[in-house]
Length: 189
Image 1 (cartoon, helix red, strand yellow):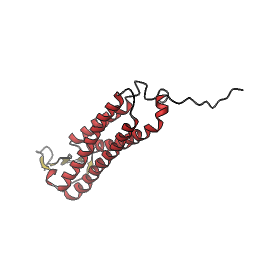
Image 2: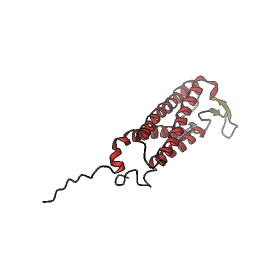
Image 3: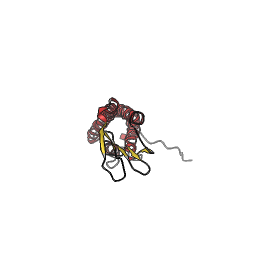
Image 4: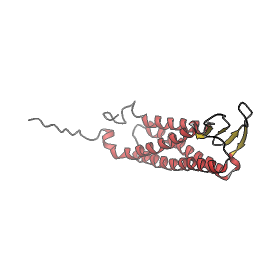
């Protein structure tokens, strides 16, 4: 990618591909039931972004309560969902930006800014959820924030990193497009 720049056809799609992976991780976080799970026996608690489920004994029936009845549950879900929707918009814009033969670097910088906004919304939802969940939901035993919550944080971290990538990419426009003569540090005698 460094040698050929983004004009090299196989390397051109790396950033949209990474955004697509971030979208997949976001879907897993939104749909996953493993935001919070019991860590030790008896496994009595399991929660997602949308609901909290408990059971009274091992092998018993799960009884679920919607977290949308709580203001913080709606706030956590809404802010994470807004961040995810912005990520999907950035993915679509990146596909459009990199599909055009001549890259629009100001357009790419805008995608980076939008990714930072998406990261802020995602992080707000990811912070509201554990703080309010652990104070307002009655939990027994040892519980841990689990795999789906981890996918949510992975999505937020990818949004930040890709935001830097998209914002810094236009600074190297001439090098990427091959408009700069190479500088050699070796001089012949």
